[in-house]
Length: 80
Image (tube, rainbow, N blue to C red; front, top):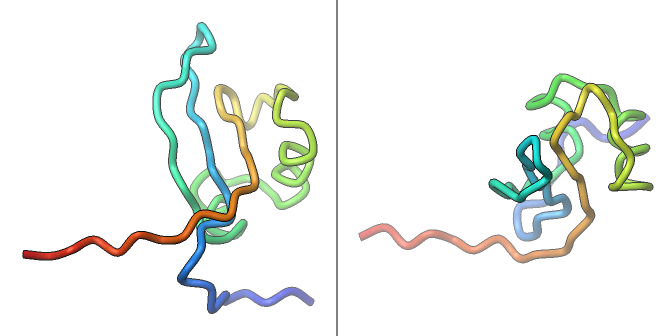
């Protein structure tokens, strides 16, 4: 059984690109875990894994979204 709570807080593992109807990139958002993406888009893990294997694949549940694996460090915001 997979862990429900991840201790990862130093690297982003997923990047979501949001596209408009014409296919132009509108926005991008980083996620720490796959479960964060599952909660935001209300989809199952299998749907996300299929999208990760082929980002060009069109899914009606994730319309206008492309999902990628990344390894980006989390940048801590400086508070003044």
